[in-house]
Amino acid sequence: MRTRCYHRRVIIDFHTHIFPQEVRENREEYLKRDRTFAEMYANPKAKITTAEELLQSMDEHGVDVSVALGFAWREHELCVRHNDYLLEAAAKSKGRIVAFCTVNMAADEAAGEIVRCAKLGAKGLGELRPESQAWDLNGEPGARLGALAKEHQFVLLFHVTEIGGHEYAGKNGLQLGAFYRFAMEHPDLAIVGAHFAGGLPFAMPEAPQVSLTAFADTAARRFLYPETVYQDAVSRWGTERILLGSDFPLVSQKAQIEEVRANVSGEREQRLVLGENAARLLRLDTDA
Image (cartoon, rainbow, N blue to C red; front, top):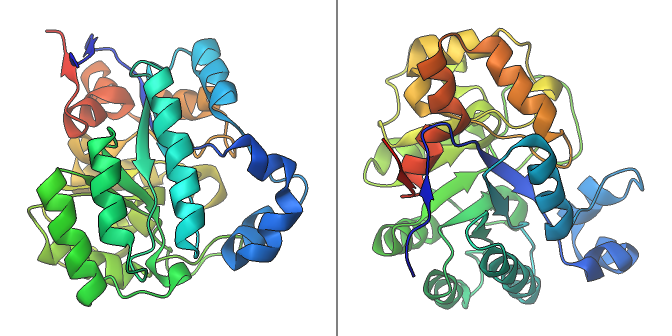
């Protein structure tokens, strides 16, 4: 299939969430089946959105492409169901939705599922939460994940837990130290840390920086850090390693785009964060 071509002012939201309609309609059943899902979605006000609603938001707010992330289900069967939905949504969207599928590396079938998702057009895995699923990112499961990601040119996006701060539903997923170690030991992989990589760009200034393949997204910034984190992250990592991420539907895409424009100085720098970095990472063509 021909690669879709985008102009340089492309806007790409690297962090959104969509679920099959059946999950929304049968929320109570899924709350009973998965502890992490219950932690994050037991509150009826916690929004569960579909691909159609994501596309509507994109149309309203000028978003060209959105990365739709899977959920870190404990059960392999639920991972497969969600992956089927993500892959179908991506195919129907004609390039506007990019599927990042979900796996539990503790499951024997995980490797085969990664291969299947790669064949069907996924470009990455996420939002990965090793600790929520009880597998060791820096042990044998993580080594297998890294090898498969390299083989299939997958981007890996991790939920990274920031040091300190307040408690909130879904905070735990991967400790900052574990993310840092994995990124340092896998400089050949494309790795994204959600939520400003758990604050890594500014939380560990004395430590060697992770490889230039590591990125941080801006997802849910307003709930975690002051707006000054943009300046801190850019000063240490540069704008070439920051990705627009809204955490839609938690944060509206419009609000996140406006926040980046208000806090990143320079037209070129804004273009990088709003889409050019993501286009390069996802191997999407951009016009000169």
